[in-house]
Image (cartoon, rainbow, N blue to C red; front, side, top):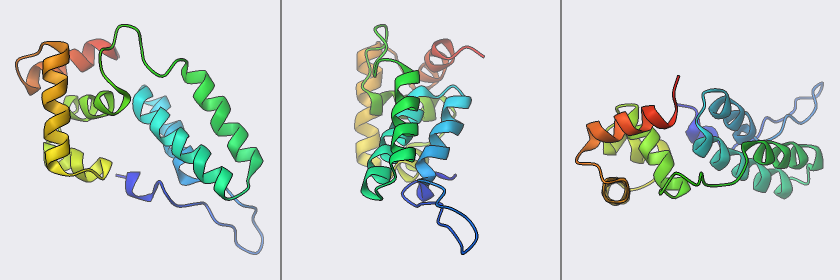
Length: 139
C-alpha cells in the first residue's frame, strides 16, 4: 500500500532534519516482515535516492541494510529478485492486476513473471506458488 510513495523523501520542516528516502523505511518494513526480495528492492532504491540527495548518512544506512540481507539470491532459489518479489505477492493472494499496480509494472509483464516462476520452480498453478512461497518463508 505504501510502495507508490517509495520514490519520495521524508522532507524537513523548519524545525526537523531531513528524514531520508521513504524507500529506506519501506525496506525496513519489508525486512521485518521477512520479505527479503522486496526489502532489497526498497533498500537499493533508497541507496540511489540518498546518493542523489547527497545524504551520506542515509546512503550508509542503506548499504548496511543491504549487507545484512546477505547475497542477492539464495542458492536454493531459481528465481531472479523481481520474480521472487512477484512470487511473494502472488503467494499473498494478489491478482496479476494488483501485483502490477503494486510494483509499477504492466499486467503483461506480471503474466510473464508468473509464467517464468511456474516454469523455473516446476509448479502447476498460482496456488502452488503460494504454497512454495510459504515454504520459503516459514512463519
